[in-house]
Amino acid sequence: MSLSLHTIKPAKGSTKKRKRVGRGNASGHGTYSTRGLKGQKSRSGVSNLKRLGFKATLRRIPKKRGFKSLKAKFQVVNLKDINKSFKDGDTISPEILFAKGLVVNKDARTKILGTGELNLKDLKFENVKMSESVKKAVK
Image (cartoon, rainbow, N blue to C red; front, side):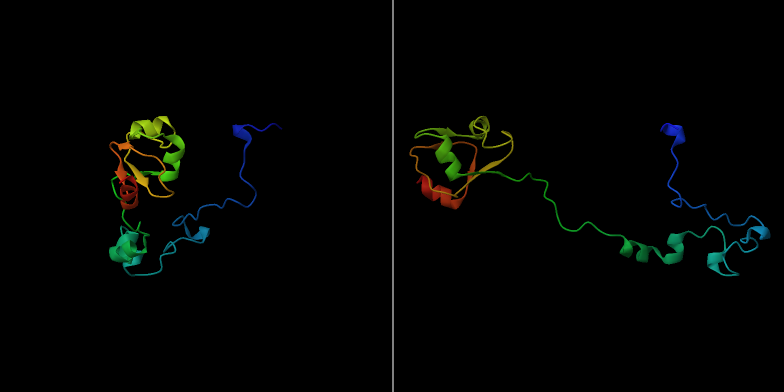
């Protein structure tokens, strides 16, 4: 027998028949239909939320904690990478960093961090943020 959509069956023992209540006494679940005798839970039209209390249900639901800023994070470039990719007197901007493959997106915010030492002179920085250590190194 070949395997096709109409021949696929679930594994043996993996499925169970649904309990059908209120289908006569011969079924074993007739008369009170597994609801017991009296009380709110035995009546129709009582939702689980009403029975448990909405506050308790809310408490049980897992919440997503923390805070996510709408501002995108900075793309980071280190001084050691600038030393490798640039020469004295070059201009450093997000577009040029993107062209040299140091950042992934030329439109996203870019920040230069002070990992490594700056060996170049007369660099011009345009539209990039710098950490305090980089500002000192540039001066």
